[in-house]
Length: 336
Length: 151
Image (cartoon, each protein chain N blue to C red):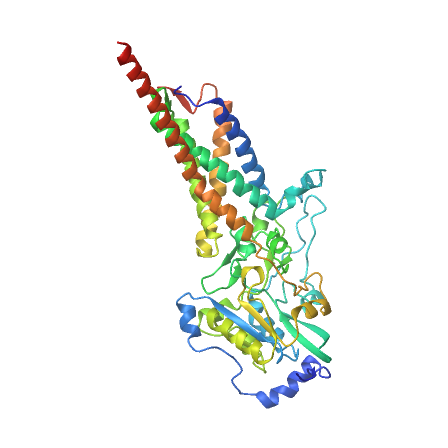
């Protein structure tokens, strides 16, 4: 394995300018054959990030912002007074707030994490584009009490901004705490703005509008180094294993939280990356994640089978009583 | 005996209470309104835990409901008949169970329901519960109204 210090000396904008000349006009989107057809058939799509190729230029971040700006919140101000006073106002709509690009915000659905790590005597600088993992069984969609978060057949996990009340439960139950709230926007303003709700939760929707048109997400399209590939999940998983094997590397996202549709392949273990990246609000970790809905699944089976137990119990009770009545009737006849 | 034994009513009350509290806890209100700050009630703000309690209480509720339904059809209806209020309650309970089961099914990794359908199921589940609460209140307040009467 070679020492990697990916483009560290180049700033994002500077790099883009330099790269633009060399890659102008070149096809940068990486989409497996049959992806559009698979998407139209409602098959699950996944993305693969080859972290060995990412230099952290941020072209994907810029492409994401530009493409999705029409979805960004435009809150009404002043915000309604909320009760009780402990309810936090989340406002990213100021000029400075909108410009933040080193974490996830309602205006920044993708950002680059950087980790400098030593592994097997080599120094690596690994850049990791972070956004929603698009889980296969997403807790945000499973546990949203209002039906605002949903999973689509093509694997996109999306928050319906027309319905979301901004309660932030999706963020609380998300293993990576991905969704971010903007106060002063959304349905809650028309209901009980002071007493319930607090805006709308925002996160990557994997450019659902582009996928619907047979196109790839803006971050995939905008990457000059084809770091990302999108395709049917089975093929992406196979590709991730092949890539990991070729670089003697590691995979993240295949089994985390029971499986996600965002797979990362890195030449260094994710445990090391997780220790090296900055985590905190809007900055997700890279730790192992158990299947958060696993236990609920077992209880769900128990709940759905419960009526059978009730019916069986009643049938046995009725049969017992019938036998008792018949016995009594038999005894009566004998006595007669 | 052709009437429901009293233990059924007692289990129902405890189960419905557990469903109501764990169901309300699915909304982010207990923390906002300081309820989870009360010593011993912090668990009300733990979404995974309250969701699992909801599933367990739902299992007991559905088993009991199925038991009562079969027992009523097989035996208790000789002495008891369901009133209009009782039919209204039964319909709402069926609605709550059907939407609850659909929502539980949807949470299985091998089942897919579209987001719009999930939203409708969620809203119906919540709506049926609210109607059941209103019905229970009406029956409680209005004198002489009962869910069942002598056959």
